[in-house]
Length: 131
Image (tube, rainbow, N blue to C red; front, side):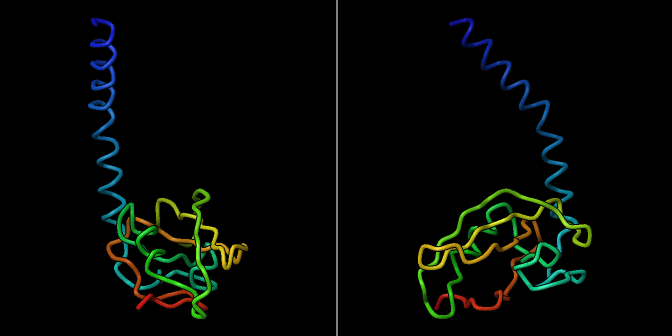
């Protein structure tokens, strides 16, 4: 029992030590976020190029955004997150990469930038917002 107590005490201590770092990082990300439909410095095809990602609010923003869109022709739609990257022209901590599947086959990758001040009200070419 004492070993278990010491183990959890250690974990709580580690969390307490790291929390200010993560909190400061999150505050910095939200402070620097944009509140427009596109990044002013975006280059290339909206959503399809890493240099022009879709702005999304918060950590869950990309998932929420992707759940609200569909293909314009109403084909079946599925997405999978495949990590994150960055782009020199975009002021964002990271840009999430999502593979998009149409009727079960890979269609394209979409790039979404979380931790922005709001989520874009624009959709990439070939997509619409669900009614």
